[in-house]
Length: 172
Image 1 (cartoon, helix red, strand yellow):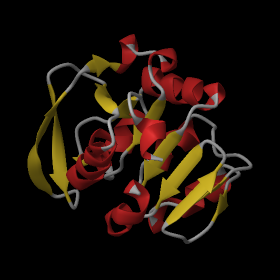
Image 2 (tube, helix red, strand yellow; image 1 turned 30 degrees about the horizontal axis):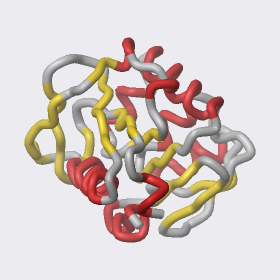
Image 3 (cartoon, one colour; image 1 turned 120 degrees about the horizontal axis):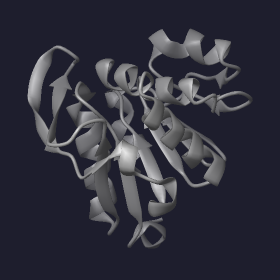
Image 4 (cartoon, one colour; image 1 turned 60 degrees about the horizontal axis):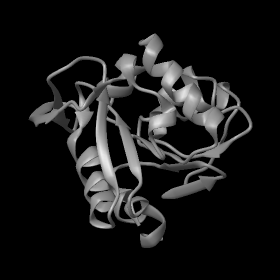
């Protein structure tokens, strides 16, 4: 797996309210095996991270605006969670189109916790098997997904995980 990721460019679609650990740990794992990452967001500057959705947890610099981003530019996509982050992303036309384009490309898309909310808005879960944070599983089912309760689920290009507690398995 390490050799497969070396030199890849992974877009991380996130905005204010992203759960810090869900961005930090996967990004660190990717960079640790030689992948490069870029944070793609709704606005320039920095995005505000959270811890447990409630507490401010620092910021991350934005590398590219989603309005200017193309799935063609990246080798893979990461959709971290936090409740506020994907809730804002799924309301943004450019973010939803970016995710749709990624799913249509067949390139890997990894998402955890509440991150699949954006996949729902992109109509990208119908007929897929995935997992998520428990509170959005009904949304996933209503969008046509088969939802299972496992720490990591791989369905073709789509990799999903339930929560920060599953990060060791997700990052591997």
